[in-house]
Image 1 (cartoon, helix red, strand yellow):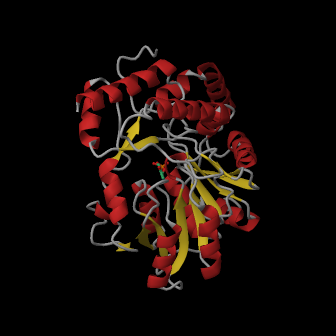
Image 2: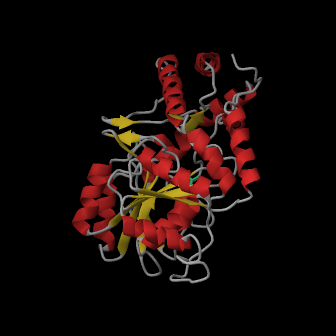
Image 3: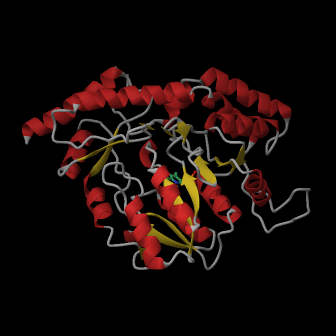
Length: 377
Ligand SMILES: Cc1ncc(COP(=O)(O)O)c(C=O)c1O
């Protein structure tokens, strides 16, 4: 069993400690090189990450939010355009749309997979008129791929561009194609420390299979420069630094192994919790779920969360308030429909502790406390 008296919901430090020697070595090499922003490590990481995802190119940027903004801008999205996404996501997805100058429209999710419901998407397009909706951001939430074949089909029929938000889905797949290569124009990744592939600070990447779009993103991430001090486009500063790239190169080598461990933990939770009234995570046929989060549903969610906390177990809610009900967005963003499903889900979801360094004993401890909770009721 883990030495920890308390189990956090996620454990970014553990992912450093398990590769400490290699990461320290990589850091030393960057320090000795004397080159800290957009250098050889970034170039090497971009190539290795693109190969891993199965696309032609990847562009390292400052964060997942920036990756979304840059992807939107490279797709020509700007003021006057609408972009459709879900309300049940990290606020970053919606913030990025407004940062690109566009207007968000929020649609409903499938209750089984927590990802964009293709029916709600089509309903929203018909309601809004396709002319206004320039792009769709599809979020592979919790590490589970959305129904990309259905979404791509609708988007193609209406001439709308698709961008994948893969911030929580490094290594997730559908029919053996990885998230980021599921037929979208561009895909955004975050390397925030708690992600399945996490840096030791902020970082992100845009994955691109289209060389022209990749070139656009490359220009936009640094003031529109192809040649230094010549701005071909009005760009921004969003660069991945050499230290983070060197660390990510080490951690990318362990991503599949760590995702497998997440899947094992999920399988063990499924067994331990099978007899409880909890609704357990569902997996779409043909999908590879990488369990960035292991999210259960319970009518007694708040009591269960308090009970786990009293036993030193950190379970979190991703996310307690959907974006359309957040103070910054309430009454201001357009909704595809009432989003009743999204609101119901937010009252019931709970993310159990999940990170690859958890031992089987840790998982049993969580399972045991949850079984006790339901015995007491
Ligand atoms: C679904 C989703 N999209 C976008 C982001 C933004 O990533 P970052 O925090 O690196 O800006 C995150 C991470 O928080 C996320 O979970």
